[in-house]
Image 1: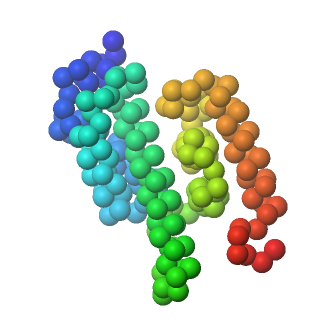
Image 2 (image 1 turned 30 degrees about the vertical axis):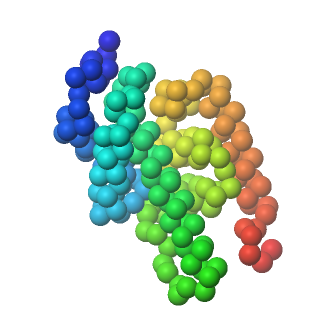
Length: 172
């Protein structure tokens, strides 16, 4: 049994917070500026309070928290995009886009998040934002390396189709 898995047997949310808060915060900073990353960190540990009884220790707590942080960050980005689109559609005053990282990979994933299934987005973030190998992605997501490779192929096809087709409402 790994140390992390053993720690889960007696760990509570407070202990996980003390041990992994910095890891979760660094992960949140990949998506948001520091103040919003801090909010996301708190949201992650609120979710931990709800989900800890169901955590089966099939992965280490660090891996579980890494994945949970990624999922919550993507959900928050998606929700912000939907709110801005709705406000724009209903004639609300212009609002600036949410602040966040500006790397080309993150911008591209941002353009795709409304069009792609969650698992493709996760694979894309882990591969192109975090630079994880296919095997590392497989470990984090609990998938086979072959499945990760297939999802990366699907993501590449989606990126190619995005380059060819303008987003709805844009001039071709």
